[in-house]
Image (tube, rainbow over all chains, first blue to last red; front, side, top):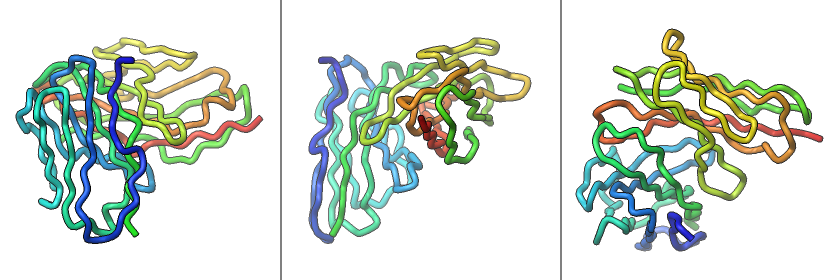
Amino acid sequence: DTAVSQTPKYLVTQMGNDKSIKCEQNLGHDTMYWYKQDSKKFLKIMFSYNNKELIINETVPNRFSPKSPDKAHLNLHINSLELGDSAVYFCASSQGGAGGNQPQHFGDGTRLSIL
Amino acid sequence: GNSVTQMEGPVTLSEEAFLTINCTYTATGYPSLFWYVQYPGEGLQLLLKATKADDKGSNKGFEATYRKETTSFHLEKGSVQVSDSAVYFCALIGRGNNNDMRFGAGTRLTVKP
């Protein structure tokens, strides 16, 4: 199936640990994103990559480091996890770069819970 | 900068009621406008879109018309079903800003039988 897939779906870990979330899209898109959705459902963009190049880097702690090995993958590594990192993290992708109007396609989310 | 404001929820309706979720935007130029729906435990799915003024996006009985004069993109459905219960997000992509999509805060809709 063509889709944006992210793993794992659920991640429960202790404060202070380091964890990674992986995202892959097989839609042939050249732009990928990471969003954080808090408990009130508010969506905040974190990062955007276009053809492996970082183009959006919102105010996010530097404990969060995205990595894009190729344009079909955008992984998110988080160091020294904190309680406030508990949220659902969504990966998305779209076609087109600057000024495009193509919608974004979302993965099913990774629910991160910090104990 | 670009932004989207949508009506606060939660919204609770009875089955077959008429739905309106208001959305207004602030943007330079003419953005593209979208409605996304998020069902419980799932990611966001594109519901409909409109890319220029007076365009009407429609899907699954939902409609929204791009109103440049009022900078609005209100979501409507004539008769809601229990299966429409979800969180609805209005969003825009501005012109020339690296495809940066801005989302509204989301409106939770609950439809009761």
